[in-house]
Length: 311
Image (cartoon, rainbow, N blue to C red; front, side, top):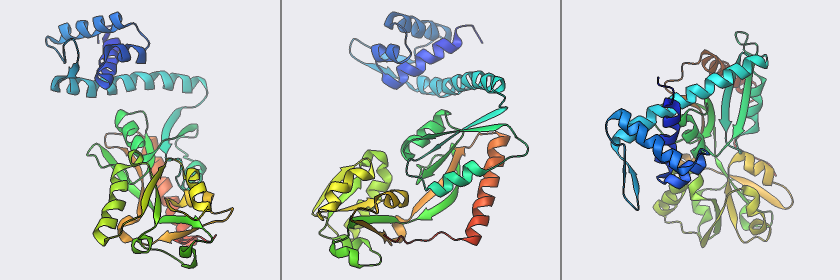
């Protein structure tokens, strides 16, 4: 590998992601002329252009997509080499980067962090939070080793194992007419004001909810959107709306006059997976997955997960 290859890779990846020389240079903290020279040097070495540009636009061609895909992996391994050296100096022989949704069931996180791997006694887990859609992108980019994701997007580059299943929960005021029911279905939400998560947080899941409603002929009076469940509180407390929440979000909301009921719809059961890249060869990651699944199974034999909440 030539001395400047990693620098050229970094410049190409930044430009492919932004398609703007100024923004790409700012992203990797170099000057715009330096970025332009890096791209020019790279294209001379390749013998052809990977970016098509004119006075207004920058476009990445198919060769660019192929180059950037491998360049990301090379940059990742370069960064991992640095992190491995740092981990050794910190008396940790291995670090696993694991992502989770901020509304992952706390039970799953507790079990994960309780695991001990005899073969890797100094293993350190670095846990971070992103929404499920973003977790998949981080896995594909190689910045995560594993992720706990709800209804992750499918990709042939990923492998997954289902570790949990739960319904949506509907949050509402304790005075709301639906609070008299033990559970709800989508038909019971007709002609009600809905609070949904922003579509950008999980487009397929959002579309599934609306498609089911349309198929059943269920029409809400209006749809409001939130990013965090707590943002729906003012609309619930005055009885004007009901909110779609995952289980952990419901547990946090079920207080101060707010109650929750499970939404019993087979097509809306939320499935949570432990996901990794298909080409992940980490023995520590494989061992962690095996022990995690085994411990979950043992705990659920003693105390199966319930599909109901009391509040």
